[in-house]
Length: 244
Image 1 (tube, one colour):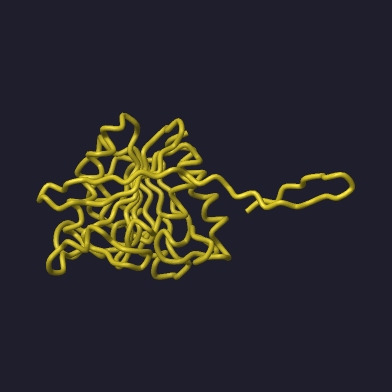
Image 2 (cartoon, rainbow, N blue to C red):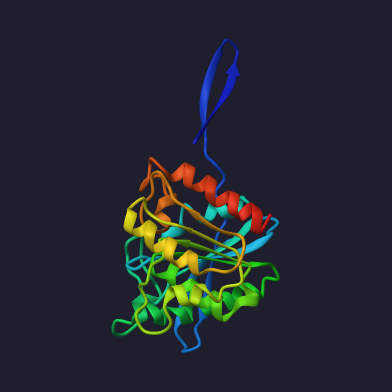
């Protein structure tokens, strides 16, 4: 909230001005196996790229409720989806609510690829953004759909996926620019470094925050008051290079 000074005669009043909130639109997608995937679109006025936002375990598209509006304001269409592996950490996960059993992280790749197909129809460069397990999964998606992916931003990636190719092995096949970051925790920093070391594309950036928390939450002031602003600066600098 920003203060605005209004003069009225000899009295000056400070009035709080609310920042503009991006309009949103519900998006309903259908995965290859028929599962309905719920999403929210935060449209930019003149989009220069599409950013697909994927959440961490136990989470939902609500993880991006404060992040996506900032991306839209910066000129990026932002679509946040509920994946089949998730929960109510940031609000209801409408996709996971209709899933039977307990699918593994790798099964959510279907949801990410469904979002990618949607993004490609927008006619703009498509950027993949992942948080925790989805930060690992976007390397598989980018490796398998290389020419369709303009950039990758991975927040706290690790070897989380179990069956199938390792995350570092997939990273070695990525042809798009890559940005990785993590919590300040040395183990997370090392995991991100190992994955990025396998990447052969350029530019590739590892941002090690002075104050960072796990996943995309590192950009949310209420969860990372000490580091969110600086971490946003690093993200915006990368986006400015790959999708100016």
